[in-house]
Length: 391
Ligand code: CMC
Image 1 (cartoon, rainbow, N blue to C red):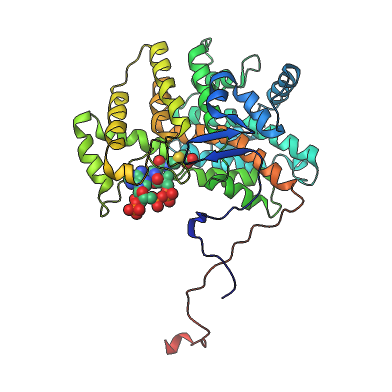
Image 2: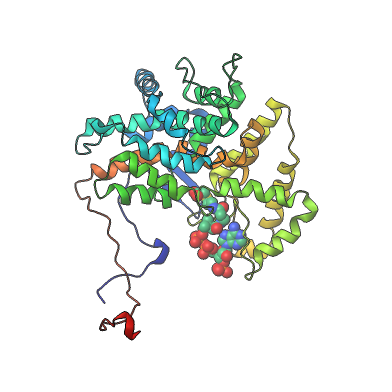
């Protein structure tokens, strides 16, 4: 009953107004505040894109310096949080740790939970963006049994993250500039993507007035699923399973078989019915990283051939299924040295800027209401309770 539109999966419902990100899925266009993702990935930095998403305009060089400095002031975690990590099993999935630790931040920053105050929202946003690399790096260090490294604010946002992840106290760590640039670009490519499932989750959680750290933890939980951010881990695992190009046709057949739940991971998108522009940049970055690190992962060849075969197959053509951002990212991350279980944690790190920017936009919208979808009820009509002895 009621005049509701039934729209499972929200395929045709706009849940909000937003001026952050524009996607034209048919044309394969992605703009942040009007700037094409390809240009940002090529010329910008993750700090700059973060500023852009949060503030609406690209920063001047003074504004960028000030912003980067402010973020660097918040990179450390409260010492008590190191104890919190030790409560997890060593083999805990980094995304499980991220959910827990980010949610736990709300217990540390009582001063930034008055969300009606724009200044406090700003501090909470800066804290989240600044601490995510530290949190993700610590999740990795914990899993390999190495000591946590404190941030080194003389390094860039991304350089600092690489050092906290791969450095050890026993030796100086030198950031490879090509790897740093590739990593920064991967962060740019993941920074925001309008009302995807995790961003909608952050908005829905935040719409009740919940504190921002808990809202971002909710976003992380949603991102983890293989249909969303978890696809980067699933895509590389799939490529490993396929192994050599001669096995591709078998997996293509499986992907097309409606009785087989298997899907080509890193393929298809709710919005893009054309090549995901992020996948284009990602593919180019694979080559740069391989060259810089002098590696040549044969899975890249498998991925390229898989893409070509799929793009020429009537099933994929008809359903407009193209590689998405997750198809090539894993090959780069693996070459850099990340285990597959860290892939989605890196996505979460980068998407945090989009989440907080969207959350801020929502809270400052005077028309904002609690998110409260309706339903089409399909259960029994009213009936009388029967005591257990009569059932
Ligand atoms: N392999 C094989 N068939 C597919 C695939 C795929 N990867 N993706 C979609 N299809 C088919 C699907 O079976 C359906 O066929 P039919 O119409 O015969 O039932 C049709 O294409 C439409 O798919 P859908 O599931 O109804 O579309 P959706 O918009 O609900 O789902 C998606 C989008 C991304 C969840 C889906 O394409 C998918 O599961 N892809 C694999 C996982 C993946 O790579 N996810 C990452 C998305 S991009 C990163 C991010 O932002 O999260």
